[in-house]
Amino acid sequence: MARKAAKPRDSSDNSTADSLDTAEFDREFVINSFAEPDPAARRRWQRARRKRGRPTVGEGAKVVSVSIERRLLARADRLAKKKRVSRAALISRGLRAVLAAEGRAAQ
Image (cartoon, rainbow, N blue to C red):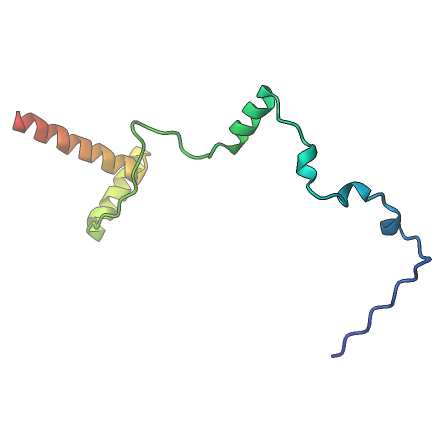
């Protein structure tokens, strides 16, 4: 299918787009006309730029990849759902318990 050729614009046509005042956008380096933000504006900007996400717990979290038997994982998921905690929270809780038990045995 062939496209129709666009009609040439008549220079005497004063359409709305042509009559808009766009002189302010024709300048280069508009950024040079801005002043430094005041301290309150700078704080608002820094707060807006801050990354969102989960709050840091302890020293923060590290993502690890661990292989777990499927049945054991399914049991862990069921228990986590029953206790209304995440899988990661359940695994962390179990790891803390094992480390505490081993710490008592080593002392």
